[in-house]
Length: 535
Ligand SMILES: Nc1nc2c(c(=O)[nH]1)N[C@H]1C(S)=C(S)[C@@H](COP(=O)(O)O)O[C@H]1N2
Ligand SMILES: [Mo]
Image (cartoon, rainbow, N blue to C red; front, side):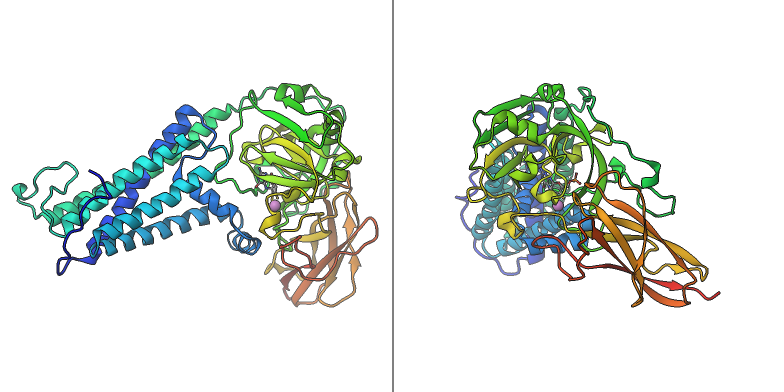
């Protein structure tokens, strides 16, 4: 039966709009159930590059259209659960839209089916717009849409008192002695639940598919020509103080990927092209054969709020980007490298930070282990001194040597600064806001970072008192954060606010000017208010 030629039924008095809403939602659930199951199967068994799942495609397209202020708000409100928040928001929106369409359908079936198909077209357009998509990716959503729209049309006909068989099995309903409308609604509700289960199953299927496609077997790790040494004096034993090295499992994760790209190292390549004398294409085996170094680098997200935790420190193992670029031979007019990931994300990095003597790496390992999938397996970039959004491309597959006046990274047209040097910052880890402290005093402890300049001093102040020097722990690398402690002796009982500020190794004091993360990183001093108890 063709959905678009179904003739309009005469409007009947007293058609219950609530029942219309229910069949609308059920049709939506069936559409998505069919589409997500087929999409899951496509990814699982054919291991394709695109995003055939309409939910992931629409989500991804939405994320790509997120302006700076909205990303700021989402990260501030939901933190790293912003992807879950997006999924919940999308589900609720779809629910309301489908209910509305079904409700309208009790007046005009043709309008409802038309609107329903329009929503489906949005899904199809999103699927086609995703990086690596091919026309075959349209199949799941297309089939789901035909099934869902047909059911919607049949159910609306049935509700309007139509004479066609209205259950999916096509049997006559009156014959069983059950009023046809009730039977119809039961059928719709049942298929709606089945559709929802289909969505869950389809999503699970595509996740295992991507895991299998990645075949996360380690091809072995390179032995670095230079190892880093982290002295015990870089860390403290103050409870609640950050560990000098952030364990991989606790490392913050920020990216636009709604599913973690699973990149197979046996087929992975890195292509260097653009303003170069000769293009270079490396396999993973080629990369491992190069001389790797180890480096301590603290990554920071530009979305980090003052006092926030979108920052982490690790030992990275990789091949210096400078050596790779030298192999390609950079032409003199170039001033930027646009790196691209397997899922189409890009970062624009100033050429000079990739060619000076800092440890900008094509990295394969994090804290001595192969990169975890969420942190860019098999290969990512790590560049000391720049926020991640302009440098730290995960799942990297391409370096285009270019110019700032010819290309731009993913976040630049979305309201973030073209250049993203990390601002000097400091954070109080302990005590935490609202803690009750003993009158005898407490140890205040935290971290400070001024990547590639180094941290020269950290000062702490109680209320509006004088700034006092904190004790700095060892700094094995100027590209990494530095831990500090300060002993607070004999505090006055009552409420107090502690502030911290850092000075970088060039002597520049961290600014107290408050700035939101957009467009180029938050600034201002971190403060923590605590209560000191009576003796
Ligand atoms: N492919 C890809 N790489 C990416 C991003 C992304 O969205 N996609 N986000 C960047 C940003 S904004 C940051 S802060 C760092 C975070 O790296 P992490 O998740 O390993 O901590 O990755 C960068 N690399
Ligand atoms: Mo970021």
